[in-house]
Length: 61
Image (cartoon, helix red, strand yellow):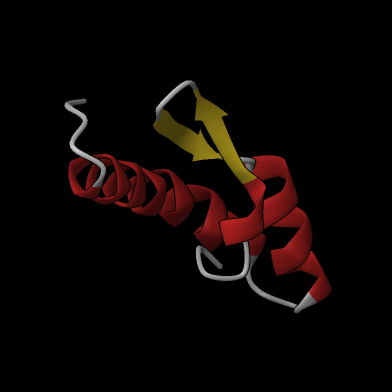
């Protein structure tokens, strides 16, 4: 879901601050995924994604 939601990044000047979790959950519903599991797992995946993207761009979190 993180890959499919990559176009829904929330940005601040010079930094990634997250993904639109509402869109990610909507996509999960459309694909028939377990929404309870997604609701539990997406925030951790989002945190890792944000950390990695910002480190690659030379930003501290």
